Length: 467
Image 1: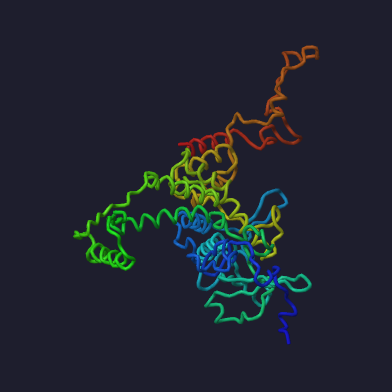
Image 2: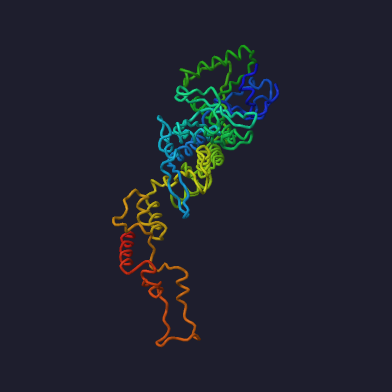
């Protein structure tokens, strides 16, 4: 009789008939299987391998590491929008506690590093939450393998495995509901719950690079000398040719590499010269690296591989955020928001702070804060808080500052010349000024919220800030 799980769940994708080929390439547990697999009955006897280009690509590793390490650098915060248009950092939520310590054996940086790496290597990453007695997520654990399962009524469950620590604590033999699973996935061209990595788009480029590098490895293992052809006018039998080849290999390989063989029978050893285009290997590898970086939407300047230079580190980071890093951060933020039931932008959301990417760019960071304070966007205390400095004593740095000549547009309208045809008071017209703009029961300075003493103190504080 069929298992009860078989009756509840149906396969997530249609199965191909027996003997029919399915389009590749194929993502396996140990790597990628070529798209040509299965097209011919003797495919495995044609010299192909399970990993047709299984040697690791340094460029792919650099791209994946750049994303995973950069995402792990950015601290995350739980934000909530306020009625006055601002926002506040939520400090007591389950998400905030998870962001500080996801579980008892990992930091948040460790979890984000491995989750992002798995996301770009395999196209998807899985995690599971453990809830407390109040039903709130109290722990978050990464799982190396996950299989989405769709029930007959459309409910989504997951079969998870690949965490030796968690599997010793809990039973994962039964499917996990989707509400308890963190599933971050990239493009889903074959199934809405199965992501694919951009590595699949680089198979041809890596094949070309792999073939060229393997050829060079063999070339240098032979002491940078190509193979030889033995020529003779004598007619040799098959056995003589085989014996001659074995004799030559014994004299020129292994411990005898570099020694001088002595040949007879009119044999002549002619080296096989390499073609001139083989010297273009560096250009070939450069094209391959550019194609891989393009697939990952990663500027080559981030990896130090040349290209147009940027005026500052901030511009370089902003270029990457606009091209690929911004998507990665937002994609992970939305997956966390779905797991923790956040209302989403702009009401309630998770945000990773990309300002952490400018930790080493001290000059750029200070210049940006100085302009923000002088322009009145930040108060001095807010600018100092960005650098983990205490507030100005006495509360003098709590109010944003602007220069005295920065006035509202309505003030300029009030300063227009009077109409000559209008009746004038004896002694000439009286021009409006801030001191004349009074409200009942207040003088002009107090109506506008400032006075001379405040101006002197603000000017002195601004002078110290600029200095």
